[in-house]
Image (tube, rainbow, N blue to C red; front, top):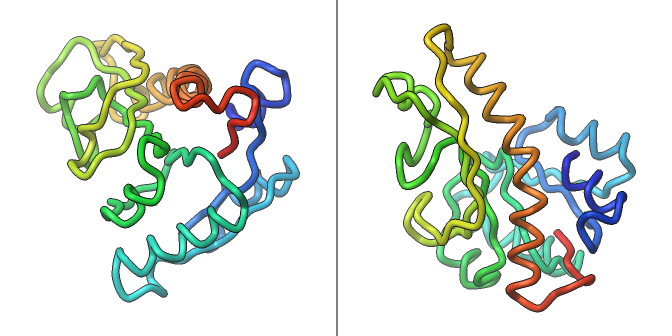
Length: 182
């Protein structure tokens, strides 16, 4: 929704041309319908391998003429096939200040480690999980009263704030200008 709002307000050039979800009944699909964004279900359980799923993603993105792919809430590790099909064009948002707390449950990792500062990172996707070039980060203090839900909520607010900026930076770097799509 943050990206749709940014494109519609003119803050971010381009348009959101397709949302792909991998969970039937996903709330994001309902939001896409409400916002008038085309969406498609590619249930990962119906594909025999990650490579098969990524081939289906590549086909869907090419049909939709996607320039940039934003992986927000896409809790799947992608294969070199997808990365090679969209080099420097896959953006991920991760709930930690990378390179700290890569992978699953970064918020839980931060709480377990007892850090005083957490946050989020928008980065380009590489073959190594959560290790691609960092585009934008936002810091979020970890409060003594924080639990997983409260820290996650504050980090998510920052994710919504930095993601449009990260998309803009990636599009500008690629020379997409006003043609940035995702």
